[in-house]
Length: 395
Image (cartoon, rainbow, N blue to C red):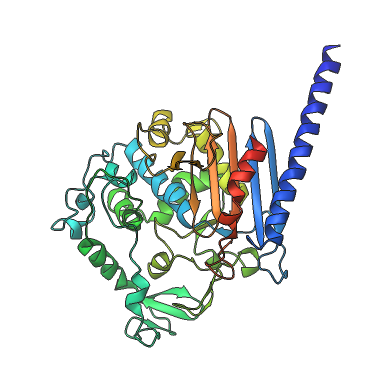
């Protein structure tokens, strides 16, 4: 009798989820038809239930069908699944405290207006730093052509690739630091989202750990958890497995494919803490599950449980430490969805990527798209409120 009862419960559970999956299919397929994005990957975990599916194509010409192991440009998700994770690990190892100054790791900031900014302020976006600097505009002449003294079509030992047949001098990073150093500050303590600090994280990680940013992340996280989260994916994977982003008509003048969409990350050689990471929804889901389990992976505590709890829920702030949090963004709109618990966290990416973890609901949601293809002017992902609708269907 008990076995029969459990069978009935399982059947009802499967029936309910099959209906929900049909609704999810409908939402994503309709969004593709309405040009919100040409293709997408979805990963959902709710309790013991997991759902993973790919939709559409790499581009609107429907040549390459999106598959589960194809890689999307994760954009600002890099801030959490690369930069913040690295900082959490170093914090765990007592390599520094969060009240330490960024100028202790980046010497060129020591005599700047940012010399007293600490890591905690930067992670919660209350340091008063500018949101972004368009470094690429300094590489363009008035006629729109690239400055040949910095960028050329020829490779060399002192250059790094930023796109197909385009190379920039490696020491241009010094100019990025210089502009960050000279940028104006707003009043500290007020929330203002900024990506500038995250551009400095690779240098900071190398200073503290004596490993490159990529090596540190691979050794401590990606290899252990078993994910293909990578920078510069064209070095390891064929272009057929990498989803292209924008047809850049202002800077690189080509379809950005296999190279990072974010211009600053590209100028840094594709490796930045601000953007640059590529991956699949399945692998972002694995990383999310690692965070849901409070830093536990295969019975090994990679990051202390207390550290994960503190970084994802540090107190009464608009953000977590590195992570995004639910918040009221207008009188009638709650981001990303009012049904998510206060303990939930995640991040979005400019290219059209999103993941969210809700510990109270045992929930993980990942939606990866390339909504910037063929142009960043395509904003139907936002106009159609696809992310909120997806969360509504799952919760």
